[in-house]
Length: 155
Image 1: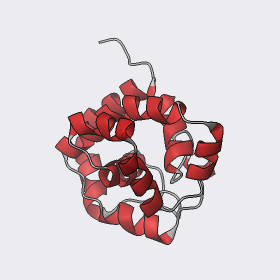
Image 2: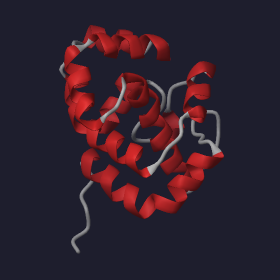
Image 3: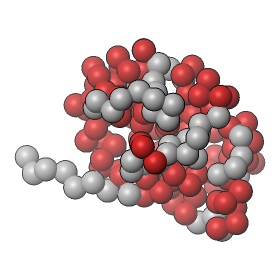
Image 4: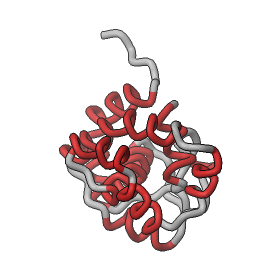
């Protein structure tokens, strides 16, 4: 649930819980998400960074979070780049602020689409990212759920 909180409040692209209730996605954000290219290394890094970045966002004041939800993608990236803590959280994973801000929703929406969520104005993926997510969903889904706090079945 931590990444759901992050996804809803911090990224303001889509809700981590229900695609149908997500916020409107700006044309610029949509363009950035569709242009983002996923691969397994990037996906692993994005997923791995989620817990630290969730803690970072949850440590911010309600005022900052409220303002964050109204920012453009460029402003969000600039603000993360100004934060030593956020950048320190991303550094071990080789991620830039832009890769994180754009990559998390690109990955999440590609996974939703691979799981059968219909494409719409609030849930979409590039054909390449959808193909990647479909081909790798069996690996990606347990990793995402592990950092999102979803209980894993016993093996």
